[in-house]
Image (cartoon, rainbow, N blue to C red; front, side):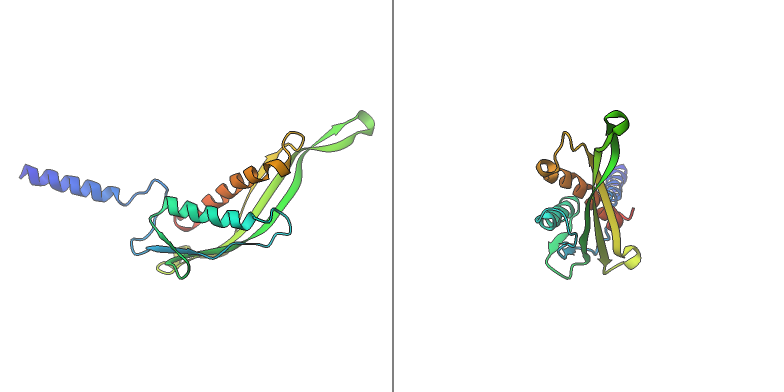
Length: 173
């Protein structure tokens, strides 16, 4: 009898652990596939390969952090969108030269904004359309040139935007 109780305890303990995920994803068991439509670059600025980089990174992230199979179209979950903005703006002006000073930018902010649409064919409670996700990277143009660091900056920005899209869709945060 004690042996049966131990086995039942182990079975229920293991079953209870199956509900949780270290990534925070809470995907219904009937959801098996996900499809991504290409995120096109609608921003007038930015590198020409920006949309390719984003598409590869978002697919890779979902593949690594869920058990979903990526399909070309008509997935149980569908994500699509556009890269809408790639902009630079001064965030920390500095002055040099006393009374006739010239103003320079101490820090520059690179901001990327992505609009995404999420569709879950089994549960439309968390569906969204054209939801805006953005993130930025501040850098010192005197020590970090954009042209030589652009890939690194975009990787950092895209990682955060993709995490936000993941959390808004399958993690329901």
